[in-house]
Length: 277
Image (spheres, rainbow, N blue to C red):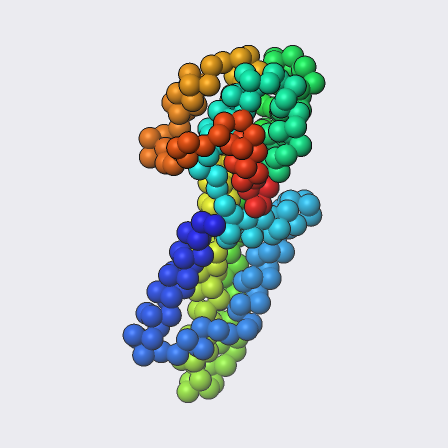
């Protein structure tokens, strides 16, 4: 699990609580139901209004992925491919069919099954590229939805403040209450800004980054399995795949003395699936 989003959100809201406390105010003065209902309710509502119902539902079902999504280290994917290459050299491409049934990653499983079935390399490349593009569009649709919410929220907060200030002007005959009412009016603007910058935009950025990492992982697997199909020598394939990975992400590797083939590829391939796939 990558806890970056959870840690960031906790620290962000914790900073607000710390500021309010240091100013000598009460955090309860910010937790007013009326402006919060307007900001969150109207923001989500206009978000759905500007998209399809399926887009909105898909975006919210992607929230656990943004908060708890795991990413697969590139070296782990490389190890899996090298194990498959060694298996194919030793037992032939038909042996990859058993590896396909043993992996939980549907992308890799489909690619291996097509290789075992004798699919033409060019046709397989087109198939895998289409699958990658479809997956990317789906992931980015969720990120875009939250980015839209981040754009709406501050404006809706201002709407809430204007509505509240209208109520304030209706009560000018009670000057002893004006300070409290004006302060309450600006809580809507505060929640509009907080929700946009502390919730919606971070979720959008996180989902976009996970989509990038997933695309890179699938590209690495695609190039790897196509090279396995063409009979590329495992050591040469390892160097080729490593060249596709940024130096800062080249961590880990195959355990020394590990048995190639099924023991390496099967166990490692099972861990390639992202929790939110």
